[in-house]
Amino acid sequence: MIVQQKLCTTDEFEEFLALPENRDRRFELIYGEIVEKMPTEEHGLVAGNIYAPLWNFVKPRKLGRVGIEVRHALKKDRLNDRIPDISFTSTERAGEIVKQGPVLRMPDLAVEIQSPDDSQREMREKAAYYLRHGSRLVWLVYTDKPGVDECTLGADGEMLIKQYGMDDLLDGGEVLSGFTLPVRDIFDVE
Image (tube, rainbow, N blue to C red):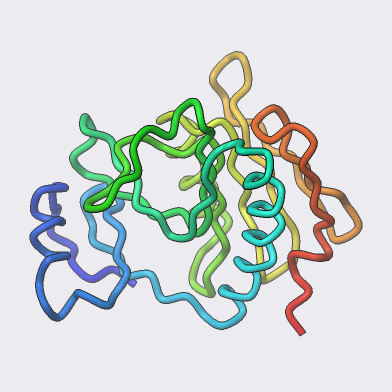
């Protein structure tokens, strides 16, 4: 849901977030528009089904950080402040834990879970943004027709998309070598 259509910079976005009425709400800045994130119960359950196995794989191996709805922005991009539903940043890139404001880099892995009003085109635009700005892998999780798009960049800079169905095994590729997750488990919300 777009909250404000006037183009907003990241500085103005920080002021907007600081308003008392916005304290317990979730917003993203997408190409200068403030958009409120309004996840459903299904969204939360699907996110948990991805987060838990990721965390269980990453934590004991000390591979990095897995986060839920962590803000990511770039100093040079004053019109975007993104919140992937789940993110992974490797130990090599993690740096200090950010305690206020956004992490000033994109995660190695960004996971976006479809909300009821998200189209495939919008989801793929999100993936393209993450990949163009430093993410190495993006998983787009579709709840309307259960499945996952794995998005990476090819050698020519074009986005490559591999589609996974319910009977497939999603893997972490070069970003999380050895990690696998049955797609069916992502959608086991009953």
